Image 1 (cartoon, helix red, strand yellow):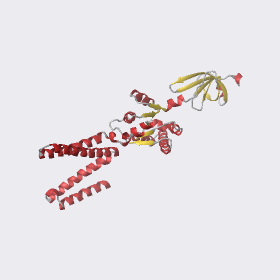
Image 2 (tube, one colour):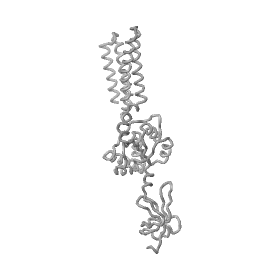
Image 3 (spheres, helix red, strand yellow):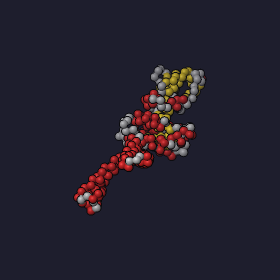
Image 4 (cartoon, helix red, strand yellow):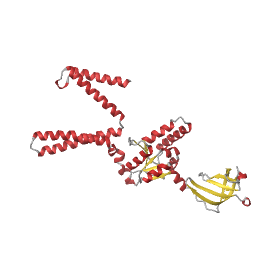
Length: 329
């Protein structure tokens, strides 16, 4: 409400100024009306500018100034070679109007062309043999990306899009306690990532208003920055790879780093619960790998030595099957 009153006061002041100092030799009443109209136009432009992103404002302003320079140069060239003074003035005015208009439109509609991140991408990233890596909401909430970054295995710049931050904030503000806890964990992970000295973190303002789905926006951003996507989302993984985008999946990395176990090897496990089949027990390794052990149901709550019989690779990871031998106790 306060800003509306302030705007009305500004329009009133302009109308008063137009009344006492009428522009263009107009009558006082008409001068006040013209001044008030100009004030309203400025207020409308101000509200539009406030809603626009800084990237759009910056790029449209730069495009307009570039258009003025190009228009002035073209008009000067034509004026120097024409013999008609009236035609030369018209052409010069034409270029000084059209070229800034074109520059403004390009700066507004194609603001990513003038984005500093996009412009200096090759200087800062490609020259060092690095690339941007875009984090999605799932991998931020998961949190393992923080441990990977702390080991210095990740190079380049981690990019956090604004639309991912908004989605993460919505999860953190959810009425569901579990979702709210996951969202707050994600925000905490981002805070620790920004404080980490191992890898730079960059917040990207690039957005795609015509695209509603966050996954589709991530794919468009990856194409724009020629970046990789870091995710745990199975569907995003598949869709992005179909469109030629390199995807780094934390779950696939974790599965690849699990220790190789061969049939016949002995290992020590803690029997946590009973299995589905008769006389089976279930244990878990430190990395979460499930171990199904025959002849061990009665040993729940004990640590025993088993012999590996087989290893099964599934879509969710590895499963190890073993057998407990009482003779090896």
